[in-house]
Amino acid sequence: MNPNFQFLPEAVVTVDATSKQTVLEQAASLLASVYGIDSVTALDGLEEREKLGSTGFGRGVAIPHARSAEISRPMVACLRLEQAVDFDAADGMPVDLVFAMLSPENAGATHLHALAAISRMVRDDGVHDALTKAPDCEAIYALLSNHIDRDAA
Image 1: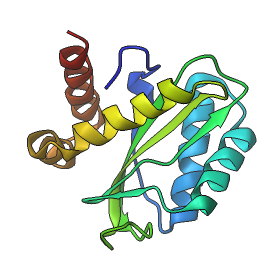
Image 2: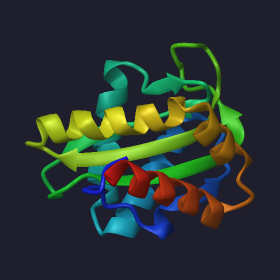
Image 3: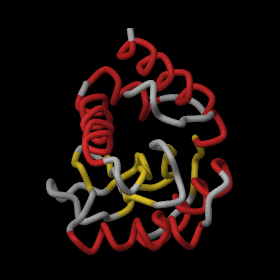
């Protein structure tokens, strides 16, 4: 990913969600609680973006994202779902791994680079398999942090 991300261990959770809307709500709530932003603003942004088209990336991964005037650099949360949820993904597969991201409103290139970094990471078969098979949130965070550090080097 990108060393300019705000990405904290508390931003990795396992959740039980039954719908795309529940996933978006839990992602907004997680971003708000971990990074100290307003959850309603975060949810509004994620929902507005989702109305433009599904952020279901494929391979069981979704990357809901939005921009916000409240923040100064991109922030990411990772949610592993206990059961896969239909996310209207391009490949038709349900989603069980979600990377929710908020970026500053004026961060055009930074936002796109962050999305590209996440998508590259989850397209890597080894990383994808390790993330889906990780035993707990600490292991997921360690895998992601190691990947971030390797990309930054």
